[in-house]
Image (cartoon, rainbow, N blue to C red):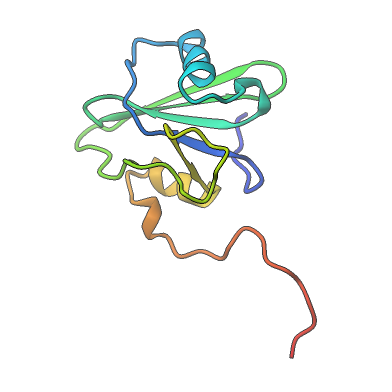
Amino acid sequence: MLQITPQMKILVAVEPVDFRKGIDGLVRLCKDSLQQDPFAGTVFVFRNRRGTAIKVLVYDGQGFWLCHKRLSEGRFRWWPSVPDQDAPNQATTAKALAAHQLSVLFSAGDPDRTAAAPDWRPVGPRH
């Protein structure tokens, strides 16, 4: 079973992808275009040109999971157009998301409009 946790690195590819690509084609895209190691456990999210479907690729230590969701009507309205400016090592072809933002995207919502607590914050004495 595939489980998305807050500790996982999640990258959304900015450019649409040819959805005839399977696991091997998307793995090559992760290496070449996104400049990421697909075997590192990163969750990669791709969109088709029409914006009606997404594919999720992740390696779990034994093999790859490839999940495909196609909307029965409508489109995924939100999709990144610029890279995440807070990640200097990241290629300019992907945007990082938090796990709760990915859940919103799965429901065809806008991940940028979620209001959740940050993934990490220092724990200290209360004043």
